[in-house]
Image (tube, rainbow, N blue to C red; front, top):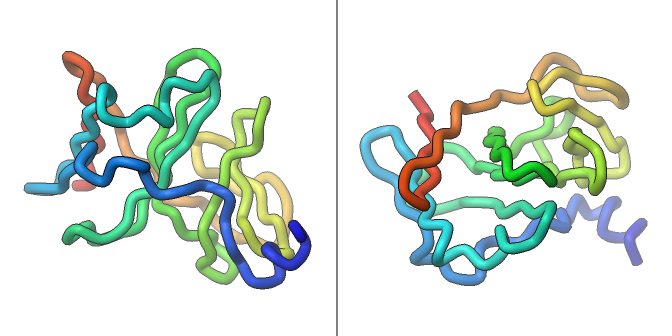
Length: 132
């Protein structure tokens, strides 16, 4: 089944269960962690799309509670990305499996260049991702 998902370019990372956990305004995304149960896991990720957001985003929390934000677009075919469990890397959901480190640098696969990353800060239980 996974091979069929890769051929179709279907990513594993889900949209947040509670869509009201985040909002976009003024070039910033704010995610209320108390409303995002996905981040209760040791390693977790959500993808954000719609609601006026100018780019698809992938938000990843590694095992050390550090958050990383990426434009959710592979540099090969533009497909979505997923985190690689237990590694500080993300990978394209397509059959090409382009892999990038958390700085966005291509590590392997057909993807060229870097995936755009965005600064993330945490303030009183809210993640703030600056897209400017």
